Image (cartoon, protein in one colour):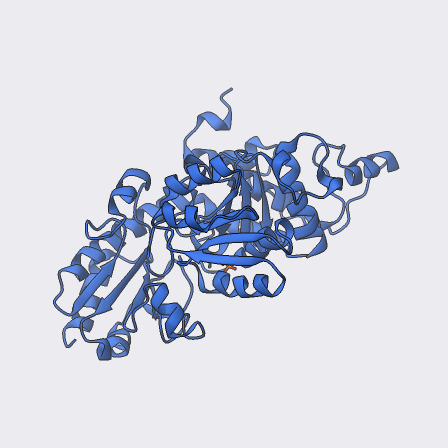
Length: 415
Ligand SMILES: *Cc1c(COP(=O)(O)O)cnc(C)c1O
């Protein structure tokens, strides 16, 4: 019998539950709602607590068979060492920072990150963790920011909303050379378009709410250990977790501190919904990427549009990297108008795109960036992130491309 690893991306996902050990013949992983897990012999319970049992559950705050099945699927997608799911992407990101960094440590991060992640940097600074944000499109800026106490470098593969792509390979080589943990938020690209392990990432973060879940109906997050980072050299692993194979140390600490202690746990119900979404990840990414590219090309040729930000356009600053490493450009597309005063009117004239925040829903979503998601950040931060006052962000959905093009045609006619 062939192993799931021999199959391609979507084949693996849709057969993972069955091949992972079907319960009662169920071809979907059942939704396990039990909080407590009981054992015939107390020795078996002790083995779960002491980590000597393979697998095993004790209390659902640290996971259930349903969340474990989703973790296994994500690990397979990333071809990693293991994964932990969280209640939201932000819970996963905070677990990475708060369980692996401590006061006196230094974090180098991209200046082009999700707004809420940027807000967490302020919290870290208050806790005594220094954060330096740099333009990560050039690895030299990261190299210049590294200090003896730098523990981690954090970047996003395709930054939201500006679509900047870091020098992912250069930063990976640098981190490996210096023994620094390289964390890549791969939410927009998803493991279908890009595997961060190929550029040397030690940990990969995905908001399951976005590409992987893809229906806009459940929140979730996941951290995957690629198996590339040598945890035996990481100074912040607690003595209790420095046991057994060092490959498991990072995830062990993340699960014990991030889930057991901090409690950002994903429910089995949400895990089931996200797992259903994950089955169609490749279909949705292919479809939305093709539509987004067509829309990007059309917008770039329109006289009312001054700039279009999309990795698969030759005008994109990191187009060469995108062509080489990304399977497609994703659903994320931003553009700016020649006349900034038309920004809100154009949004209002559009009939199909829904005026809402959020990303990677099946419906196209649209939002004026400076007025909403980056309002709190202020104009100085917006300037460093390359966010113009007229920037409009699109999350392209599953609608037919001709319907979207016709809608944009009428909406931009008067602009
Ligand atoms: C949405 C998002 C997050 C946070 O995910 P939630 O599931 O909404 O908490 C993190 N990173 C990026 C790049 C995102 O787009």
